[in-house]
Image (cartoon, rainbow, N blue to C red; front, side, top):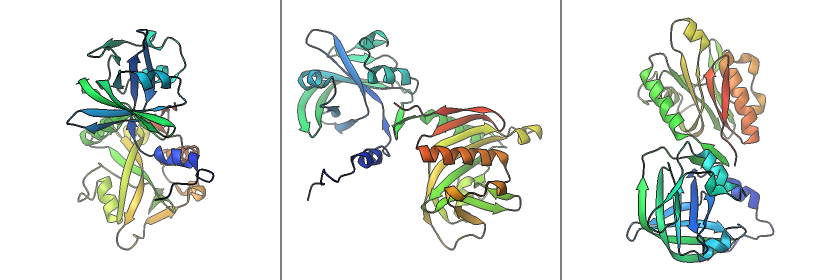
Length: 320
């Protein structure tokens, strides 16, 4: 197997492609030779073996902590919980007093672990492996704990909230008036449906199941579409539905079409993002939401809208 030519290899594109892999967010820590703690934020953490219990984390050779961790006999990994974005930010910074800004404790090796983390692993350093512009710390787990808290996610340079998706699914299941929809792309553009009232995004009264014609999955199945729903994009209350006595919960995912089965349904339109006929979209809330999607898609920086169809906030998936 030949190695890529480093003169022509697209390093930036490679980094962006790797960003499609959703990871957790961790803080990696150790105790320096003078007894003071040291730590940094990382998402290059994974399990290696159950027997013996091994994990690994990667450290850039350009990192200020490289020398310390390359020689440390122990290290700990704290898997951050969803409400610990501030902790991630502290350890991603160059602040000289990181440990004074967070709550932490020690376990078997004396390396710090973050208070309130979703899980942590206390390790002795088994091996330090040279790996290009990084080193790999292979650690044998001596002690661990997990709290059951929802972990903080990371994808495409941004934090991801898993509990929001879970809450939205629960809301759609509990509400008789909920609508669950999706902004779906394939290689040609975004999926829109031609209805008597104008162009609409595909939606149903609930998410599942594919054999339920009123669910989103059922609507997609009737169109012959197989789709991956990647992330929640908006959760809001329809003002019109509320005025009519319903709760009007609207939940929209963003995702992609991965296959199309059978002949194309006559109501199915796939429109390039640059050519969406905005004046033909009959629902103002869907039109506004899709306009935001086009903008954020271009910037590759998505947020989650929470509010109602008239006013709300976009909770940015904060860049690190």
